[in-house]
Amino acid sequence: MKATRSPWNRPRAAANVLALMSLIVVGSTAFDTIETPHGNAADCLGGSSTYFSLAARLFTTVRLVSVVGTDFPDAHRKLLQDRGIDISGVETKTGKTFRWHGRYASDMNSRQTLDVQLNTFGDFKPKVPTAFRDTPFVFLANGSPGTQASVLEQMQAPKFCVADTMDLWIEHEREGLLALCKRIDGLIVNDSEVKQLTGKSNLIQAGRAALALGPKLVIVKKGEHGCFVFSNFFHYALPAYPTESVVDPTGAGDSFAGGFMGYLANCDSVSLWNMKRAVAYGTVTASLTVEGFGVERIARADRETVERRYQELQQFVGGA
Amino acid sequence: MKATRSPWNRPRAAANVLALMSLIVVGSTAFDTIETPHGNAADCLGGSSTYFSLAARLFTTVRLVSVVGTDFPDAHRKLLQDRGIDISGVETKTGKTFRWHGRYASDMNSRQTLDVQLNTFGDFKPKVPTAFRDTPFVFLANGSPGTQASVLEQMQAPKFCVADTMDLWIEHEREGLLALCKRIDGLIVNDSEVKQLTGKSNLIQAGRAALALGPKLVIVKKGEHGCFVFSNFFHYALPAYPTESVVDPTGAGDSFAGGFMGYLANCDSVSLWNMKRAVAYGTVTASLTVEGFGVERIARADRETVERRYQELQQFVGGA
Image 1 (cartoon, rainbow over the protein chains, first blue to last red):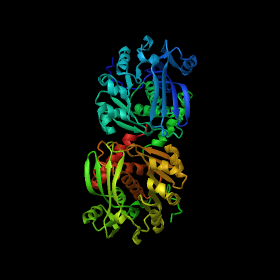
Image 2: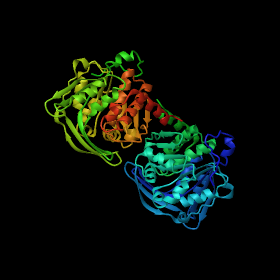
Image 3: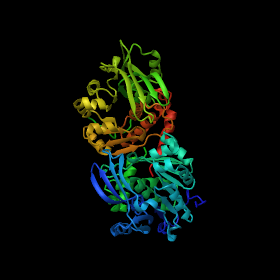
Image 4: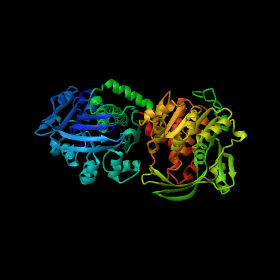
């Protein structure tokens, strides 16, 4: 159920207390095999909820709901737990963990999926632990709109709920996605997805049309070109952090979402200014992720590095 | 000959007096036939120097050096003169004016050249009128590096000289272009051109490498994704103005350059802050050009509209 009270411009209050129970993410955990012009990496820890959590934990406590197989090693669980991520919502099912194998083109801007094995993720029916149901900030990582809606049903009174989606659901589960759009506060999509969703070829028109579907906030990710934020109160554009070394773009979008939601959850306020700052922090966490294979770089990031890049980004994009 | 004194961070002084003789552009004048998903237009007034002048005249007096054929109508001359552009450097030669015919793809991001007739522009050997040779701000619109260098030779002591170029010259007149790069203050290119010029596939690396070729300033145009500015003192990114109605992208790059150079010439100063503002004004003039076929929209733009869009752009991109 969506909260009726609006969190917009709500004053910041007791942020540190709330941050202890602030953010939940529901999505995939995976083993990724990645081929890029810089090299290959096999069976990396990946998945949308993993990237999201590893970015968001730089700002707040994260509650993770996902599913893995019996092949999922304790070392990965430890990696997440050591970073303060609550993995008590990660279910272990008999069978294998979701696997993805992809190859990036030479410009790193497009990729080809070579193999997908859904395994235990194939019939993932997320169960939000009772202790997690009061979490105010909710991120529904990419999944079928039906699965995403089933998570929302389990939440007591989410204050700010953002969903990711993809071309597959826009094409094949359009009705479910449109129904979900009326229940969420924010939608995160990439530029081709928002055009596909709305039928508008101009990005500004597409952003406005997506707002009309229900969300108060539409964030359009443009990869190396940064992102656009649309709301009925403001539009906003932010270039990407100027990264010279893009090693592996996998997880950039989920890391962006993690930084964005993590920062907002820690503030416990979604004012215009916090929103702009959150977009900048998401941009920073995405820039860290792409500098290493899999979660390697984002997993060893610290808040000091994040703050330094945030300041650099402000210099880079500062108004005239 | 390039001035030895540096204009960087030179204090703003007597701007209004200097603006009367501030900016010269040398480049093409053309008749363009344009096909877009929004419709077609035949024999529009076009050419790099025309778009540049019509954007720059919003800020300063522009001296235009170009060539046209005997088919060039007085109405076009009047259009330029009525907007304060000094066309005494536009030579009329026996024969026809340069003609270009192009078609845009449905997303407006790529175009196909269907026909080019260089006509009188084919052996354009620009002669800078004596009265124009003291102009401090110089823009060398797209042309062969040899032709661009011949213009520089004719200038007495340019304070700030910026050149545009294209893939043709990068591929076929590389030596001449590299020699030119050592003599200019700024280079304006698009993202594929800067990668081609430097052999770097990462845009940030490419921008740095282009700086190493000589210019103090490298501006990389990314179309709907805005632009990057590289210098040894700062890097800067600005998204495009959020235009909902892109009718015809022809001339966007030259209009950007016109707004950029026009603003700087009017300030008579190229400090960091003026540079950032100039990039924003160039972004605004480009946004006006693309909203009409050919020069239709930029030709009827006024300074009030420019200022309003400049303020909107600041809101759109404001730091967090």
